[in-house]
Length: 192
Ligand SMILES: [Zn+2]
Ligand SMILES: [Zn+2]
Image 1 (cartoon, rainbow, N blue to C red):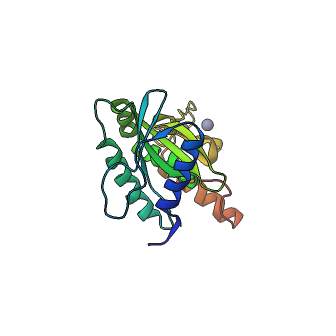
Image 2 (image 1 turned 135 degrees about the vertical axis):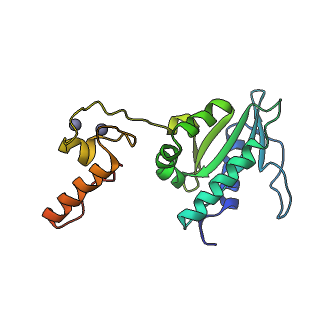
């Protein structure tokens, strides 16, 4: 399976960063076949269990990795752990809003049930990482427009995927009409 960023690479880089930032690493990198938490770290009396994945070329393989790392992370839940961290290569961030939006309420509920759950985006090139919470990836943009054939909303403005005024079908056909009359692809990401 071809990877753009290997698991190992993400882990090695993250371990370096954490050491630099004053975390105490409580385990060393596991060898192939060894089970257990990828990185067990501690800082200011807080315990972090960190599970790491890489970034694969194929989107379905990436999704599979994501489901797997999620279950790996929550399986570490114990009374004395403060944070369950899913550490992903930075490029995962490009698709995370979409991923969260796909699950909608379910995503939000997971965040409520597991307040320990965090997502860290690791920049393996710059040797940097960004801490994010689970639920900050869920942005529901409520559409306030009540005009069903509003061109602005059907084209780009309405980002509410569950909008009752501007349905997915209406947005799709608006685009199609635009593309037919302009003979090119509509130059904005899909809003449905
Ligand atoms: Zn509108
Ligand atoms: Zn709308």
